[in-house]
Image (cartoon, rainbow, N blue to C red; front, side, top):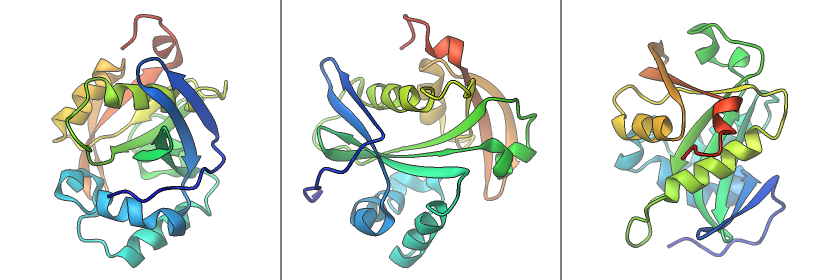
Length: 194
């Protein structure tokens, strides 16, 4: 059961017809630990790489992320209920940047949808992804989004491809073999994109 959350200031808020209001809220590691710890340590989150992490380790990692200018963590709220964990980063300051030729304007993301409450809802992940990408691309200096899901995570790769990402090469990162995927600003801004 997810506790009630006081409304925090969002860095982005978007109303999505038929879905609700999506708010992008900076992660507060201590305040949000009761939400994110069970998410990142469930078997369904094995590709996140934290299955065996203690509460203290998860807190420590996200507090460290909070000290960086190059990496950021967010909770996505749907109508004030946390439903996803997103991270963004500058590839030049991340191990992924050593595995491909980083272009000016590249910006990286990680996505974890929280556990489904009730029946799965068609379009749920797509709506959240759209809101987060809209936030990320609100900065005009960001020209292309890069993500690097685990190469075995066919579901995540397929979802990103449906959102317009183009598959790139497989790369070796610390702890995983990953598939690079890229989304240009121009592709994201096409009206028929899903």
